[in-house]
Image: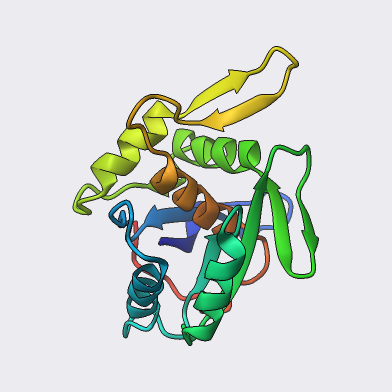
Amino acid sequence: MVERAELILDERDYVTYEWRRAMRFRVMWVERMRLGTPYPAVVERVRQVMRGPRMVGRCELVMDATGLGAPVLDMLRAAGLGCRITPVLLTGGEREGCVNGVYHVPKRDLITGMQAMLERQELGLPRRLAAVKDLGREIAGLQVKVSERGRVSYGAWGEGEHDDLAVATALACWRAKWKERPFWGTRSLGLF
């Protein structure tokens, strides 16, 4: 879960005389489901989180619809989450697109976008969250592989290595960076 806030900086734009603004993002919640957890249990956990008192009407679920994602998407839609669901197919392509409400996004763009946010200190990873250590290890362990044919792949390839938390966070960051006005309001969230 990634929260975004628009900050008003202490400097003015010399052309428009408006106060400069900056977007900041913070990971608010991250949780790894145990490997082998049945999909109905995963959907129920997502429903519990999305229907929580702080979340109802203030959030959107972005999900990786790659592979077995279509049946899970159907299960999530039927679960009554009370929020918009944005399905994303991770691709090895060159550009982002959307067909019938399903986004096709190069994994490279997700990963490098999140890494750039971290580098520019736009994304905060609060230490108080238990799974943030795992997330940090996954982000640090992401690798780029180039095949003999020049195909570039991003992920974690070592034995026992995971990238699911990193990819989920990158998906949340990708959606949170959209330029449209957030539907949950513009008041200060008191993040920074």
